[in-house]
Length: 236
Image (tube, rainbow, N blue to C red; front, top):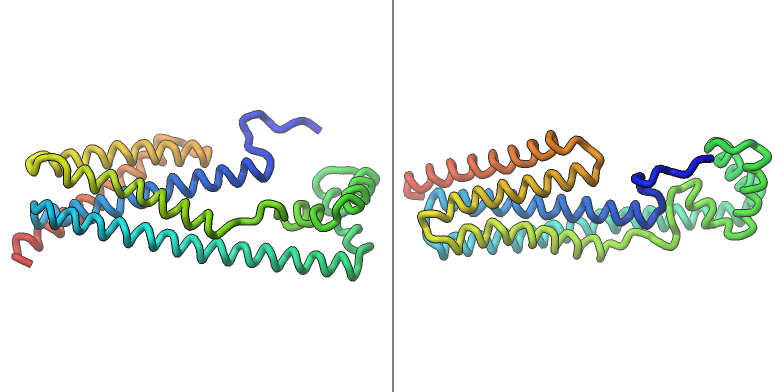
C-alpha cells in the first residue's frame, strides 16, 4: 500500500479542521453579503448615518444569532444521530459479536485487503477496541471526536459577525460623498478573498468560484440599492 500524497488531507482531526475552516469562510461570506446588501439598500433611501448604523447593527445581530441558532440545531441533530448509531453498534457487538467480526472483515476486504489479512486485522482491531473499530470503519465516526453543537454555534456567530463588520464600518465611517463607493469596493475585495479561499479549501477552480462569489455580492448590492432608491424617491 502506498502512502497518501502529502497535499491530501487524511485523519479525522485534519478533516474536522477543514470543515470548520469552510464553515468559517462561508459564514464570513454570508455576513459580508447580507449586511452589505442591507446597508447599501438603506443608503439608497437615505444618507443619514444614524439610520445606516441602526440598520447595519440590526442586520449584524439578527444574522449572527440566526446563523448560530441554525448551526446549533443542525449539528445537534448530527451529534444525536452519531450517538444513536454508536449505541446501536454497541448493542450489536454485545448480542452478536461473531456476526460483527464477519462484517468488519468484509468491510476491510472491500477496502482492498486480502480475506486472510482482513480477518487478522479485524480480529486485532476487535480485541483492541471493537466499538471504536466498527465506528471508524463501518460508520465513519470517531467516538473521541463527535461534533460539538456549541463549537459550531460560536464559530458561525463569530464568522458572521466578523464578515458583517466590514460593510457596517465602511458605510458609517467615511464621509457621506465617499461611503457608498468605499463600501462597494471593500465588499467586492473581501468577497474576492473569501471566494478564493473557499475554492482553495474545496480544491475547486479558484477563478470560477471567486467570480461567482463576487458576482453574487455585486448583484445583491445593486438590487438592494435600486430598491432603496425607489423607496426613497417615493418618500417611503
